Amino acid sequence: MKIFYDCDRFGNYEIGNSEDERTVYIQEDWGRPGLASMFGWIPCKCGETDGTVDCRHKTVMDMINSATSYLDNHQGEEIDDPGYFEED
Image 1 (tube, rainbow, N blue to C red):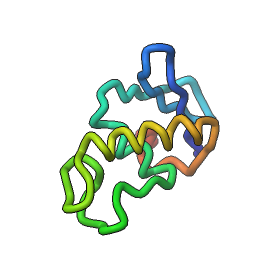
Image 2 (image 1 turned 90 degrees about the horizontal axis):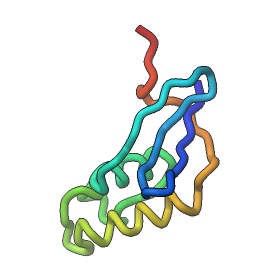
Image 3 (image 1 turned 120 degrees about the vertical axis):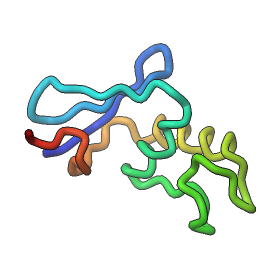
């Protein structure tokens, strides 16, 4: 199953899938690095952070802002579902 995301007018991200109407909302800034990482964003080249904790090179806010920019520039892309919509 493929998943995609959209951003609403309030800046919240919604993950949807290509097979049915189920969705998952990412409403907090802290969720953006994880969502962006699924779609190919890398928090820092050092590999010591997932984007939700500071590393030696970047602050969390730097990474959240970077993840948000990445998401805004890659909206409409689809990837294989990593588990958001697993079958029961």
